[in-house]
Image 1 (cartoon, rainbow, N blue to C red):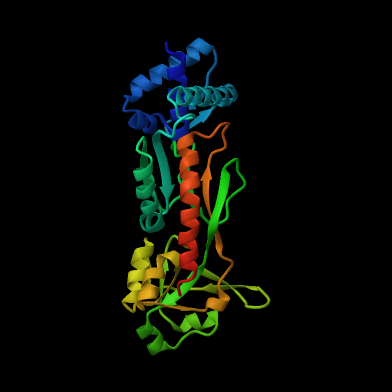
Image 2 (cartoon, rainbow, N blue to C red):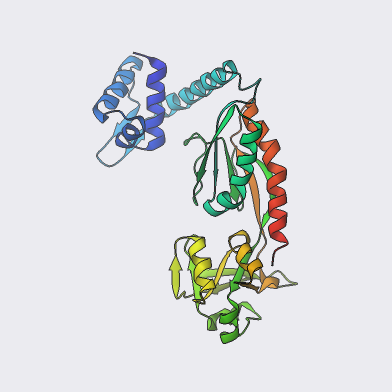
Length: 304
């Protein structure tokens, strides 16, 4: 039995939460995977997993073994990267993730420039409006918009992002321009369901007192682009991150309102997992991307 392979299989099972999910990821029959884990348990002489029809959990021995196995696998992967030259020459695959629209508008142009300068680096850019787990999904670096939870991640701040309310000029002409957040109650609204309902948050100018306004949307959509398109089509006012409507505002299709009542801008960071020595491919991208993304965010801030 290859103990290192067995450790890797066990880590995948734990990361994916079930044998079936791990089997799909590894393209391995569940029966084979289950047998490999059982062989590992027999070799160790301890049960590592408790398996039921609905869930999988670790025993106390399993918790300790998985923590040790993860350290060992990380050390081996780092040694392999060093042997392959990742610590002496920028090379290899770099996996990045970012929100869908921000990634398409602002990260992709940076990536294309980066690829032209570093021919030995390949990039896989994963665009998703959910925060992918970096370690579990083997992601090297991510763009995160919003306050970061306490973690072992290393964060490089690249700017801040406003949360704005906007509407089409025609809608505002028909219903009036809101002067205070409460005026939105007389306007139809479009909600982007990634921004939690029922409340839209604001701050009173001067005092900074928070204002939570209950919104009953006429339309709820699942993407920011759809919310912006609906607002441009006079369906209602919408509340989005500034970059999601900056082009429409610049073109005159949407108009920002209630700017004095906006909440504190959300910080934007490039984050990566903490590890000993950073591979040069990551250092090269961080040094290249951070100033360009700062400039892009500053440009958005001047829009509207």
